Image (cartoon, helix red, strand yellow):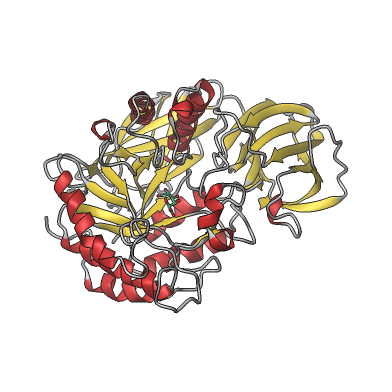
Length: 538
Ligand code: ADA
């Protein structure tokens, strides 16, 4: 298999609608979001990307590391596929024709159609950027080349793993398997096999050991670690976890959702240095490079499919429901090998109290469970008092903002509401045999506001100090993810904008350029005093 990296400079055109013919008189980087180009922010238009690709000819696969919000892909002006799942990496197999130069075109828009089936909604509390978010490559393959190798750890004492092998189109006669660059065995083709990894080392946040397997030359990196979620504890390699971390958006004012690898690395290094051990990848499937870095740094990730506050009219819409299932399946297929992922999630803050919700939740749960038996599955809920779906998932996860949204009658200080609220949830779920996580909690602060009132850095720091102390003190909590790592662009075009000064969700512990607010350093001292090591005793 020969893979062409297609990142770099492409010819480019912006058009306002699909009736206008693109004139490719500009240039654009891939990956790259077109609506962060000078003068383009906030505009909903169509970005047309075009380039030449020289191939040997024959069967090929185009891989796109996610784009938004809709895209269609053309090879010599013939459509080879569409993407309607923002952020989700896609692969398209097609016939690349004769040897020589061909034209690859990607037409992508950031329109938000007012239809129930649309995956991105204007009311979501994050900006729906337009463009190509991730890497683009083209692989030329032979029919019996191995397309994917999946590894599912089965046993942390013996290093036993299940390996799933998927050829492109026809099965090869034999499989030659190597672990960590050394020949292991050659066997007749099988879709699934079980192996004991030689000289295996466990993956854990404290010792993030990785292995590689290669099957007929197609390789996969994986880690051996076992998750258990029976009862109220979430265990990794037999040890109970206490998770403390933050939610993070893949977002930057100058890059949109096409965040460069180096920015992602620096974000994750900051999170690690802060003493956090957990990231909720809100609210869409995480990029491959983000997960690779977390594998290497030993950060644990909640990876979730795109959704936000969805309602009965969405659940009952066939397109929406089918697309939700499709994106959950793709998320798991794309990322199953990453040991850093410890939780799969979906449907952030859906209307879990409605009678139509259980069918939607069960459908997504079953789709993920069918592909991956090895991780707990959940969603973040904001209606814990009336939710009718908690029984259907493995972890109780609650988003709540004591000291922020519940203090309209308190002009400055609501920090005394935090601990009682967290104790109330702990009490509510005290007999439920599932781990409990605060999947969001926090307060807004405008960078540079030192008034001490709400919206100031000091008030946010007071809230988060209280949160961190309470999460460590109240045993019932398996953990919490603070909302959020850094400020991120929110919608400009919905009513929500009135609570989003500057067009940002300002609950970041850092501003959008990653400059720390008071809370960042304040809670660092608290976290350092605690023991988040995974080798702690039960
Ligand atoms: C919700 C939601 C987040 C964010 C947050 C907030 O819980 O899941 O995406 O919008 O509220 O800032 O209010």
